[in-house]
Image 1 (cartoon, helix red, strand yellow):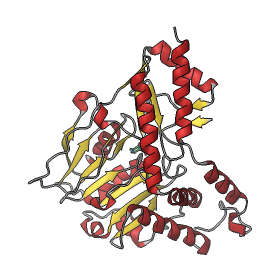
Image 2 (cartoon, helix red, strand yellow; image 1 turned 90 degrees about the vertical axis):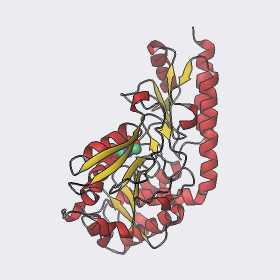
Image 3 (cartoon, protein in one colour; image 1 turned 180 degrees about the vertical axis):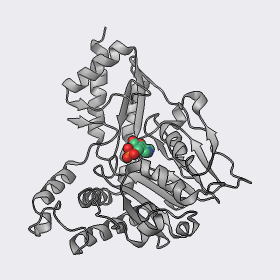
Length: 354
Ligand code: PLP
């Protein structure tokens, strides 16, 4: 099957093969990767290499720490304000859709939340304007680099005097980015970075001095940095799968990946714009290269096309329940050829549709 799901998402076959081999015998240790201790040389090496590769890919220096945490994107929605937003202080959020909104809701448990800009009135079919932060007194500014559900994406990471925090769950390592413009960024693994169970967090060292309240160690960035991601029993296997993905990305090269990302997205958007049965939802300039959302002619046609795709070994293209119709996710494991297969199906379906 070609899996266009938004997450858990497709993984490259090589990564699946290497992960499977490690389940039987990790690195000829005689132990399964599921059995190796989380404190010990075998896992230390995995952790260390993964951190080095993240830094290499993001161009991060010694002023950043790289963590693997659990609890998914939502725990970051909570941990960020828990650590950095005092009760009577304000955090700024750029609201570009579902995940930004949810992050704001979590932050409201801890302090004041200011919506710096929003595209809610357009039902998030475009990005909001990037806000002017002049004169703002904010603990941090949070934004979502790619809107997995609504299918819009910020083309770059702006510079900001106020610490900038980004949820990069659905477009990390899909193109070159100015990661160092962020004081902290995070990404769940289950899209571009492996299996479900671990979340990448990169945090600039000075941020640990900005922690505003005492929180239990598991929820404290300072403690997690001090314990180097092994405060509790770390999820060894998903972190290993992320390492395999990182090696795969490095091997392919981020420029080649970015080029493929552009090719895949432009091929698919061109077909959506050409095909008489499909219509794009998002304003052209703001379209995501990772999650392509579009409508069919009507509900009946949409259902028929979904079935036609499944019959032809293409899965995961149904839209999110809150937006509907179609969403095709073009993460790194999806090849240009996979997208061409989908396009052929769209064309065949159009020819035979009455
Ligand atoms: N942030 C973004 C951009 C996402 O796409 C998702 C999930 O799809 C999340 C956060 C939530 O992640 P989790 O389900 O791991 O909490």
